[in-house]
Amino acid sequence: MNKIFFGLLAALLPYTGLFAQVPPKDSLQIQRLDEVVVSDSRFELNRENSGKTVVKITAEELGRSQGKSIAEIINTKSGIEIAGSRGREGSVLGVFARGGRGRQVLVVIDGIRVSDPSSSSSEYDLRLLSLANIESIEIIKGAASTLYGTNAATAVINITTRIPSNKKVTLNIQTVRGSNQTAEDQNYNLSKANNDVLLGGTLGRFSYQAAFTNRYSKGLSALITTNNEEDIFSTFATDINLGYRFTDRFQITVTGNQTKLKTDYDESFGMIDAPYRFKSGQKRSSLSSSFGYATGSLNLNLAYSEFESENISAFPGSFKGVNYVMDLYHKYHFNDTFYSIIGLNFIKDQIQLAATNDFTIIDPYTNMVYISNFGLNLNAGLRLNNHSEYGSHFVYNLNPSFTYKTKKGYLKVLSSYATSYITPSLTQLFGNFGANPNLKPETDRTIEAGLEYASTGLRLSTIYFSRQEKDFVIYDNLTGVYGNASDTIDAHGIELELYWKPNSKIQITSNYTFTKRNDNAAIRLPKHKVNAELGYLISEKTYLSFNYALMGTRLDTDFGTFENIELSPFSLVGLYLSQEVLPNKIKIFFAMDNVLNEKYVEIIGFTARGRNVRAGLNFTL
Image 1: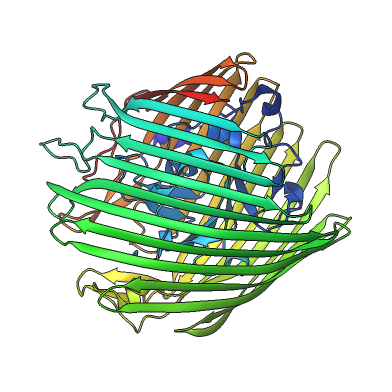
Image 2 (image 1 turned 90 degrees about the vertical axis):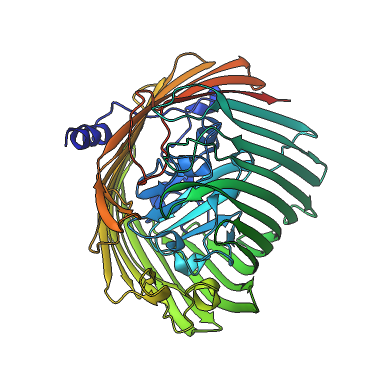
């Protein structure tokens, strides 16, 4: 109870936060009043004119996260819990947003949706992502199916990769070394390594970039066992970006990615050590083109993705999925008042099992934004989902807001009503384990209402959300078959966010999330969750920050007894220190996670990390 109380204080009082630091001349501009957001409309609009809840993770924040995974960074934001991100790197991740499940969260990379048709619920594996090649992340919370299609029911994680430098040649090298240990075994062996190389530039109208990443960790067992053996995790990734600007209005970009992942794991039924291994690989390629004119642009995105994975265990299996995406859309704006987008989205998912199975989705959609000169803003959209297995279904959103401008900022009132529609995955319909071709699609409804106040150096927001799920697809452990939940699932909650920069050296942010579901299957979802951070710019070259995280009580299933058990709350404290050795050229850093070495249970039976340290070097030429 005391942890909950002090955690709420941390969220609501200015004792913790963050401050951008590289380079110093840009650090004061983070989260300004005129911060631009894109995800909720696909137009660059000032935050005060956005009626949706959008969280932006900037390049500066990512630059302070060397050695962390994408899941760890996203897990610090309100409304989201990523189970497994505090354990051994390589653990299976459970992505929950606003009380929902992973398949209700859509991942978008450079405007193109990504998903793995061969996985049980067509989710995208965040373990495949490399931090080194990411410029920024926007998280739009709530239903966003009108703009992004199926699966965008609780959140969209919109990732923008780094663009080539304007210089002829730019080289960036980053290396990180750190410990990987539990609270009980503080050996401080250097068991974790990240190496990243980024080479790119611009030659006239041609731009190029190549990124190479390797992540490796050992030292921890997936399960808590007496043997304490090591389960190794590694990834190797290559990203290529080639662009050509034919004219000032017409450009084409071609990208390619190949990632290979290997992770050891143990037998979770019986909780015993086992020499199991999961191998996964992805190949992604895309083509993006844009033709702009004075008041709009015509855009085309094409993508092909191939996923192959293999389980080496007592229940071995190989899986292969292919995904095709085409998104053609026209953007138009008139006098900074009306913004419209009309498009056509095509998706084809395919899996190869005993036979090849596939389905296609063809969605025409439209969305409009109106920004008045008297404070009223309106975001509204409509999409017709045409599925080869399930026919046609409409989804829509209505998002009015009103902004009252003050001398130093604004007060915004926002609301939203949106629907979404998720069809079963190919594995759920035709897979080898529990497939059910008679599954119904899931339908979702989300209502939001909130306030946001912003002034010089301060932003405070609160949002209430209410979600409803019907025909959610579940796996019945008794029958071993997928089915639709018979009950309507309701989830509601409150999100609070604070940003405060009292002076040029200190910056404070914190967030608090309250979430409640009406069903007993809501495992690993904390009722209360707090994240907070305090950053201090000691000098133009030295930056220090402290972070705090609180996880409230939540249920988890003991797979030895198949009973749900309430887990105790826990709190973690971390610190980060960086020093520029040579401005804009060389930076070194040191970080410590779980400073107090707290012992806690994130997932029953699985290893959780104790106090760990890491240090690194970033070199730019």
